[in-house]
Length: 232
Ligand SMILES: Nc1nc2c(ncn2[C@@H]2O[C@H](COP(=O)(O)OP(=O)(O)OP(=O)(O)O)[C@@H](O)[C@H]2O)c(=O)[nH]1
Ligand SMILES: [Mg+2]
Image (cartoon, rainbow, N blue to C red; front, top):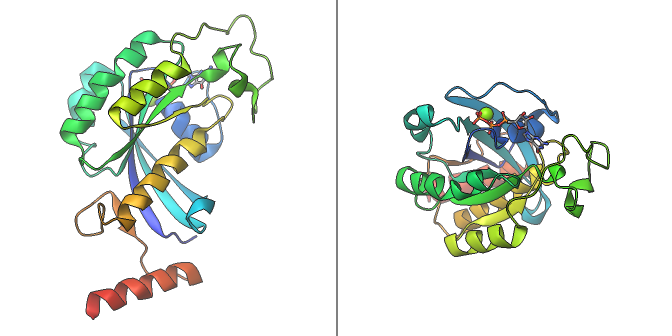
């Protein structure tokens, strides 16, 4: 299948917040209750179509990084050149939310200054009072009493933090699938806006690549346009 743009993403945040689970949900539509912790980095790729962008097909290339402190220097090296970042915390863990400041500082120090970052509050399925968690859910509508946990970070607080820091914001659940693709989609829409404004381009931004020749009308037109502008 052909694509219009390849966008490089990183997924970062504390250990056990569900970074790998979000990626597995995106790429395989699966959820593992006991995944192995990430050692260093893992990679996943997925094509998504964005209706708000004339149904452009985007190839998401995602580097899922380990949240464990001992891997931090290795994972930082993957930040460079990324166009997008999912900064993940667990809505039932205040500590993981507090630590997003430090992850964000790291991202800002090592990644492209124009990178689009979306703050993702994961595991909303664990909060029984969260109406969003039952929406579009592949899991049973009510969370069992054994697994239910208290929300430690309100939507309003996270929203405010995101606004202050210039981040996009969404709450999601890798378990139910709620808002997982939407998180990547929202970030991709903002990145495409930056491409239009000339903030990201093929030459300067390794995290954004326009399509090469392909067999669809859409991408052929785009390629012809690109060729024309480069030779005239
Ligand atoms: N209930 C619930 N559990 C989740 C969700 N996402 C992840 N988990 C669980 O949280 C635990 C940690 O998930 P991982 O995806 O391995 O977390 P991670 O952020 O990749 O962790 P590191 O690789 O160590 O940095 C696992 O037991 C998952 O099953 C979610 O949306 N809801
Ligand atoms: Mg992981």
